Image 1 (cartoon, helix red, strand yellow):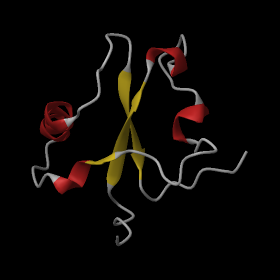
Image 2 (tube, one colour):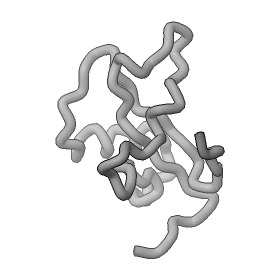
Image 3 (tube, helix red, strand yellow):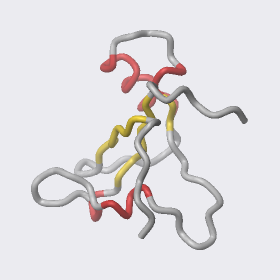
Image 4 (cartoon, helix red, strand yellow):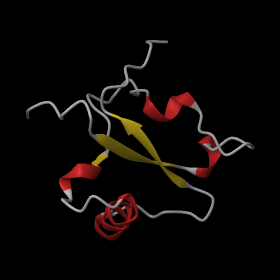
Length: 85
């Protein structure tokens, strides 16, 4: 697969246990577990609609995850590099 454009965005579902009291998410959300070779994310710009609300609605529509009320979709720019732990 080709790299996504740096100006694009991905979202990842964050389970309630990783949503902090202030609404931010624990950095573990975007860390690979030992058995993983990649993260499961949704590419927002895949949907040509420029409206972020509509893009997120499409992610919710196609997602097979069982979302819980206190979980959230966290957006991250593709260009952002996370420091290794």
